Each structure stands twice: as structure tokens, then as C-alpha cells.
Length: 322
Length: 212
Image 1 (cartoon, rainbow over the protein chains, first blue to last red):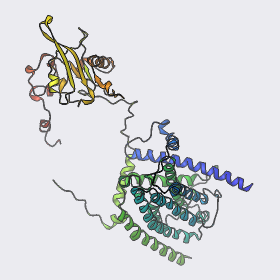
Image 2: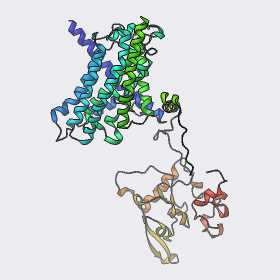
Image 3: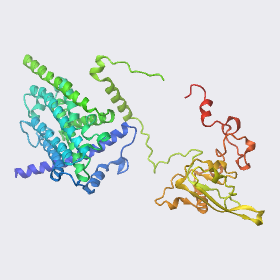
Image 4: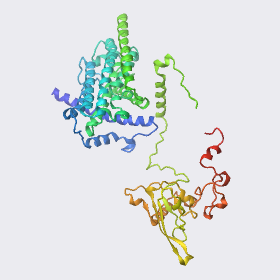
């Protein structure tokens, strides 16, 4: 009985997240369109509101091409690895008090593990496609993950020190519902490092080197088509959602807001996540791509030392104040 | 050429990445500006005077036929050689030329408008119609009948202004009024006739200094 209930919850979560992912693409196209003084999708439904559904139907019915010289099992597995890893990290996110599928004590660590696992999907896709563009994309993804995973992990150590826990619900509770309780202020350095690493981790502009359209056709997903390509996209958007949620939970006080909402407790959480999503898109509409060596430079020479300094500072302050 | 270097940014600017913030500010401002997109099939573009669109032969209201006299000037001037005219002599009417067929190969046309400029009787025109793409190439090889039909279709459009359509700009440039053939001597804005007509390179010199 309990398992059945859990399955129902999983299905509900899956549906809701998939709808959000679909409309995140619409949101992105609309906002980027308006930032470029265009309109964005306008034709399918009122103001293009049905565009994500049309896209989904289209990519579902498109021909699924597998290159002749591709490493077949790996080629087929790569998008699924990506999607499964990203989706499983949804399980530990608390959307509101008690609204969490698996309230495990190593929540934050689990999310890290899963997001690095997802980049295995990208690397394997690049390798198995047997195409130079995909290969370069996969290689870049690997290098990027190695350098930015570290700084992201380190940037959240400050939060762990302050909250004294890796459980995401406990981190939110430790921040309390006051504005000044948010870890954004005491951990502003950590937030800065986290934010930049978050962009790199989700392969977003200005760090979208693995799928740099202008140089690598489409990077690691060059050889993919139809539904498999769409799965990579879904994984990317779920990754954005997960990273935005982590940012919200660890720095912006999670589901706490100026006043509690009676019927829909996750409202503040959703609003904050969408604020993050908007900033993601805003940055995409503004910044050009980093050069490869600049990316490495920023990761190793700037962000990791900054994150380490943040840890030392936080630890010292905590030791002094308590 | 004067090269404008950006001023070096100070250490505060380096830390806070002022340029990125300026760029973000710009895109945020654009987010709330009015998009310039035109929703084409619903929102029609405004076609300006002198637009060079689909070819047509003007149908003479008196005879119901084309006014073309078969002088072959358009054939001679056409840079892409897409006009073909077949004529014969009519001994009954003082041995004058009568056109049998007038063909325009529209896919080859470059829409330079020379044919309508040189035409002494304003017989060939380029209308304001711009939506005539087809899926088959042969349907864009206009015969005389098709060209006359093009004119009828253009005139029947509510906003075609067929009366004023002939006159404005289709005259060889830089010619004095007296040197023009009679149908071309139509009232036009003064900058399009005689001394004040400025085209091409002269246009920039004509403008007041400091304008460009």
C-alpha cells in the first residue's frame, strides 16, 4: 500500500515536472525573443501557448536515426543515463514542508552525485556517436564537469557548515523564515561561486561549450535525432530546474516567504525557482560564450580559490561566534 | 579613421564586472520594448511607391489589349534578357508592328525596372504585387495573356491606386522633360524631374552637410 502511494506521488511529480520543463522552453523562447525585440512563438495556440506540445509531438514522431558506425548500446543508453540521473535528483528536493519524496540525510550530496552522473550521459553520447563534433563536445563536457563540479561542491560547504546538515529540508529550516536568515547574505561569496558553477554545470550560456552551435554544430547531440534528442533537452531543462531548486533551497530560504500561502505551500519555492530560471535565460540572451581556455582559467584560478576562501572564512566566523 | 579605445576599468569595475551588468541592463530594457516583428499574413507590409513587384502589361481601356508597340527597347535594355517579344507587320494599318506574344521569364528577372523606365508608352509595369510564388517553375513564365491578367488582378485590388500608379518614378533619369516621350510627361515631384533630380552618388552630395 505504501509503495502504491509512493508510485502515485512519483507519477504526479513526474507529470508536473515534465509540464514545467515543456513550458520552461516556451518561457525561454518568449523571453529571449522579446529581449531580441522579436515576438517568439506566436502561431500555435494563443500567443504560441501550445508550442511546447507541438514540439513534443513533432520530436516524438520524427525518425530515429542511429549512425552506422556509432557504438550502438552506448549510443542508445546515453540520453537515458542523462535523463534518469537528472530526474532521480528530483526525489530529494523538498518543495514545501514535508513535500519531498525521499527525505534522506545526504540530500545535497545525492544531488551532486546525480548531476555528475548526468554528465556521463553527455560524455558517452559524445564518444559513442563516432563523429568529431560530438567527440569534441563530449570532451569539453568532461573537462568542464571536472573543473566546475569541484568549485560547486566547495561553494556549498559554507552552507553545510552554517546549517550543520546535508539534508535539504534541514538546511531550509536552519535559514528560518526571516529575510535576514537567508544564506544569501552571509554566504554571498559562496552564492557567487555557486551561481557561476551552476551555469557551467547545466551547460548553459556562457559556458555551453559542449554544445556550442557556432563551432560544433550541436556538440554532443549532433548525431541524435527525434525523441533521443528531445530527451537530452529534457535532461538539460530538468538540470536547470534542479540547480535552480538547489540555489533556492540553500541560499534563498526555500519555501519560506514573506507570508505563508494557505492552500499551496510551495508557491514561494516555485516563484524563486522561476526567478532563477529567468536569470538563466536573461544571461543566455546577453552573454557570448567563453573561450575554452578562459573557461578553465575561471574555474581553476578564480572559483576554486574563492570557494576555499569562503569555507575558511565561514568556518572561522562560526567558530568565533558560537 | 578615428579609433576610440574604451577607458581602462578600475579594480572595482573588474571585481563587479560592470560590462556584464551593463549588458544585462540593456537586454532587460529591450525585454519591455515593443517587438518589431510583423505578423505577416495577418499584418500586411506597407508597399511604398516605386515598388517593383510582379510584372504586368497595362490593359488599354479603349481597345482591351496591351498598349505595347513592339519597339523592343525593353528587350534591348533587359540585363538578364528575360523578355521575349514576337511581332509581325500589319500592312493594313500602315505597316506598323503588332505584337504576337510578349513573354517574361520571371525567375530570371532581377527587378531592376529598366524595362518600365525605357518603355515609351508605359505598357510594361512592375506592380506592387509581391505574393506570386509558385511551386512549379513553368507557371512563372508569363505570356502576354497572363501579363494582362496580372494587371487586371492588380487593378482590382482595393488599394492599388491604378490611376496614379503609372506616373511616379518610371522615367529615364536625368532627362529633360522635353526629351521624354509623351506618356512619360506626367507630373512628378520636382526632385524627380529636370535639374533637381538627384540619384545615386549625387544624393549624398545633395543632402545638407553633416547629415550622413
